[in-house]
Length: 504
Image 1 (cartoon, rainbow, N blue to C red):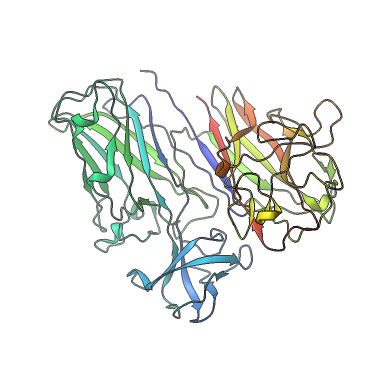
Image 2 (cartoon, rainbow, N blue to C red):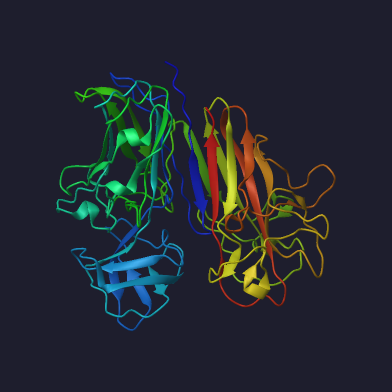
């Protein structure tokens, strides 16, 4: 039987964090495989879990333990994250209080500030956790008809710390190995699990789910449906959705985790007859990396990286770098303190990252870019293309007319009164997959687009595309930013996500 494979891999740049995602293909069993299987989390970011080093009542500075925990730096902690400080036995948040991260003192360091002073001194043997959770959708297409009395069984990894109830206590888990770590089911119950309603495989025919949380010592979470009325026909695309508040809680990294390398967890999906004999089954693997946990049906032949640009020489989208140029990292673009230049090409307002992708996908790939919002002072929401009047650095419009948008590029021209904001351009490094080039064909100086603003309901845009397999296709993404002399003082940021979708 022909098996279709679809692979999705994502990286998130929060001007401070990088993530990617992949799902391995279904493994062959003695039963039939589903013709397609995938799993997708609405919030795919790793939970954060660090040890407490210090935090004094009445102060806002918190220091984490630099060794022996899932997170040993603040690399995976962002402004506005909600932090719960637990005691040593993880018995909930101390004092029933959550704190919000105000800022990270230093990239890769061990200290951060909270928006309000601590109400109590943190326990030295306690933990600092920032829970990330959301809905989980599991999709597959049946190969074999499921009869009345047959079942659908989904097994999801649960943490096994050796303590009863820990796998559903609402606190993200960690362990030294994949076998002992997993998702926390928190308050997930039967009413939180639904099945898509399709002809010849209706949701009513499945009835209610039976949800069994892992026991914290040896078992995983399971979701069981029994086909109570009418068969579920072959070749039917079924989606099971787990959704409540807070939802499925993502694990923290393993205590043996290396940042930038995936911790891969396997979900098993199977259908069975009335005698529990397996009809169809597939394993899909979800692989968390710093920033986000994202899942999809994948082959392991995908490599996607975001690399820093720190060279003091060379031309990037027409701008020559020198010792004054901004250095990026794989997880951040730290502009530092900005001064207005009104659209000039001064290198101080240009920064670069390099994206490289390899895949054996027969139909190639697409790499997309999007931002959660425009750059807001202290993360404030920016309505529409809001500018400095609402404490935002707007997305650039490039020129008077026609203006650039997230889908239409224009040459960003120098002007003493306009064309400020944030935008990006592209330059091929290896291959020709960049969807546009900084100089075009008409002598342009910096062809630019806005980053698609998801808060404004804009649609993510492709930045790299190829219709055939790729071996280390690479491109520079060249960010540019400018402000006016009246931009309100403060700390501005937003989050940018790269999503790569190979096509089989």
